[in-house]
Length: 452
Image (cartoon, rainbow, N blue to C red):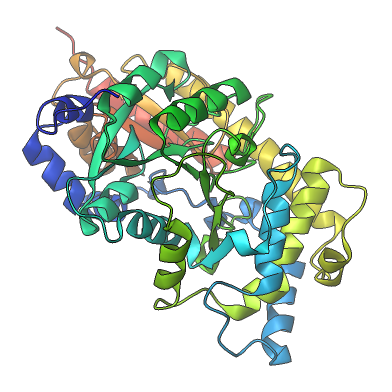
C-alpha cells in the first residue's frame, strides 16, 4: 500500500496551503453564507442559491395531508415519551427495508443494522466519532474534493486527519481512484463517497461504484456512503445504493428525510451498517456507535413512529413498483400514503430535472462561467469562474461577495469546498426565480467583463 507523506502529498491533494486548510476547517457553509448575505443590495430581493433547501418554495412542499398526519400524531398523546436510544423499532425496520430494495440477495439490512439520528448531520458526526474512537496516532479518512465541509469539521473534532482525493470534472466528477490509492496508508480508517453528489450533481454508475468498493476492499477499509440525496436523479440516471457492494467491502450508509422528502427542518436521519463481508479494521464500529448513541439525544418520537415508515413505504411503492408489502409495513401506514404523495415525488424529480437543464443552459450562455457537465442528481451544480475574463474580481470569494453586493444573488464560493475559483449553485428554485437569478449573474459578468 502506498504511504502518503502527511505534510507534502496530502497538502498537494488538498490544493490548499496550510493556512487556508486551517481556516477552512474552522469555517462552515452557513457561516460563509451568513457573511455574504450581510452585503446584499438593499434595492433587490435576495435570491438564495447557496443552501440546499428548496422547501422554502411552495412548489417543493409536501401535501397538506402530511401536515395533518403530524397534527394527528401530536394530538394523540401517544408519542410524548422518549424514544429508544437507537431509534423506534418500526422506523429502524422501515429504513432497513428501504435500503434493501433492489440490492443483491443476501446483502439486505435488518432492523438491528439501522440507527436513527437527528438528521444527516448527526449521522456524520456519530459515524466519524465512532471510527476514531479510542484510536491513537495519526489516523486519517479519505474524502472528496470538492466535498461537504461538515466531514472536515468533524474530523477536526475527533483528531482525525482529513485527506482529499480529487473528483474529476472532465469525467463527470468521478472519483480519481489512482489518487485514492496514492493518499491511503495503513492508518486510513475509511473512504467517504457522496452519491448523488453534493456539490457537483454527479450520479455514479454501477460500474464506478463497484470500482470504488474494490479499491476500498483492497485497502481493507469501509466505504462511508453519504446517500442523503438518494433517488434524486434525473436525465436518465440510475441511483444505485452502495450497499449493493457490501460483499466486496463493508458499507456504512448515511441518509435521511431532509432532501428526498424536502423536510430538512424535521431533522430525521440514519446510519446503516452492512454486515461485515470482508476484513474490517474497525471491528468495534457497531459497539462504538451504540455507546455514543446511548449518551446523545435522538430524533423526535412522533416523526419516527407515525411518519417515517409511511414515507419509506411510499418511496418503495413509487420507485420500485412494489406489488406487495409485508404486514409490518402495512400496519405503519396512516393517511399520508396516498396517490397525491406519490405524484408529489414524481413531480418533484421532474421539476428538479427541468431546473437542472435550465441552470446548465443559462450558465453556458455566460462567457465568464464554465460548467463541464450537466448535473444528473442532487440539487447542485459546480461552476468554474474564469477569473481572467473578469475585472475587479480576483477569486471565487470576491465573485460571490461582489455578486451579492450588486445583484443580491447568493452563491457559495468553491474555496470552502476545496475548489478555488469555482462556485456552487443550488438550482432547487422555481423556474422563474432561477431564470431571474441567471439573468442577474449574466448582467454582473457583463459589467465586470475584462476588455483587455
